[in-house]
Amino acid sequence: MLLVALAFQYLGGLQPCVLCIWQRWPHLAAVLIGGLALVMRGPVLPILGALAALTTAGIGSYHLGVELDWWAGLAQCAVNTLEGVSAADLLNTDVTIGAPAACDKVAWSLLGLSMPGWNALVSAGLAGLWLAAARKG
Image 1 (tube, rainbow, N blue to C red):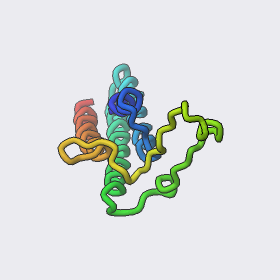
Image 2: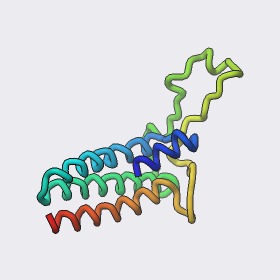
Image 3: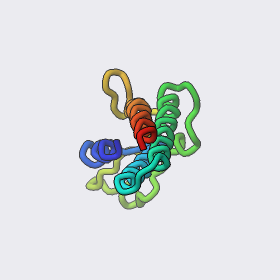
Image 4: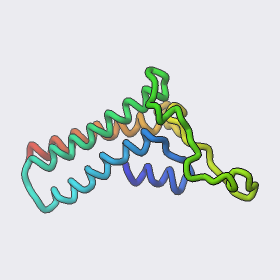
């Protein structure tokens, strides 16, 4: 899932919002936990992996709700800044500046489900796999 998000950003040109970035951190934690679980046995690491997957699923669910206007997003979602962009860049017609990503806008969807929705769905499934691994470990 982390590689897919990075591909959408760097190959597809879709800039992430604050909640998109937040969803990536638990995926990174799960990757690191998975690496450790390859060399260390027992149920503890798979349980931690499941918690990481459930965390990103929860953030994805919250993000989906923001996109669907079920609830308000975070303050950082509403304030789209141009942090890191100089005044000279804003006035230079040769510089392309992408619009800041807003949390409540759907950047991409498949079968009616946006990226955070797919993240929530797939991550919940991954949590189930982690829990199955915990039972066997």
